Image (cartoon, rainbow, N blue to C red; front, side, top):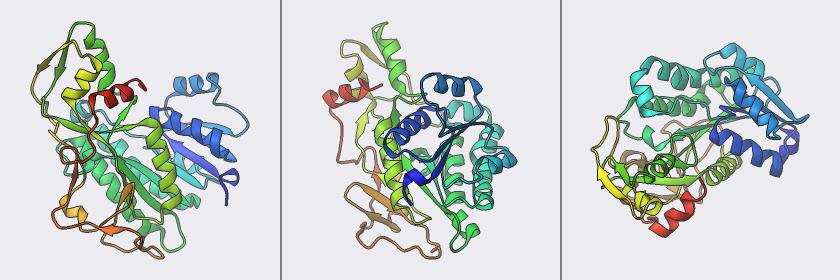
Length: 324
């Protein structure tokens, strides 16, 4: 079935990723129906005013905490992309119950509603912070990953297929450090929490393309991880404000020096491809097999931002930052 015959729903559809995803899908794939599911009526209105409107659009006010509302929204839906989450680390630390209700209970509601509505494919967005988490946000996303991967056991053979994508920091998303650095640039001083810190880096366009590619590949139960570049936080600061003084203010609670996208333990059940990795569960789902074209990873392998072979130069970072 082509995309022109499908209905797609995206939770968190008014967020940075959601808007970019909807714009690209509408322009390039032209699905039969695009359902924007979010709890922000103002942002839905702004999307309509900006031209994301037409006979193929449906705007649903709702929260992923509300299973009944999700079931109503998913009637007749073929594909669900789950992008809704509470993702600000300090906010999740200060409001832990709220983070669990949205990121964990919300994932359970997506799974139940998708199965009940007969959705064919569900792809959930995760984060590098779900790997060996040190903060509550990462822990909730790890739980969500496990729920989606093992949701295939609930749907059974021939039922809804669930998979995840996991990637790093997104240029241009809400909470990106680039707007902070641009503001600090005016004062002549930029603050970093630790000069040694490294992070994975991906643009919104790349994230959307990877999600669409993963939907085409997924059988159910995979965690798809793109091969993306890394950078040091110091180089990012120099790229944005080469003349500014850089001040180290100390690492914050819940932060890591380096992020990891595939851990050493996961690597034993991971296959490598030219442009991505696929992390598999130890549980085999009906009619799903590991891609025979993948290459097993060696003992001791881990894919982290400090040992990543692809490191962005200051010139490349300047090009990335310009996209914000």
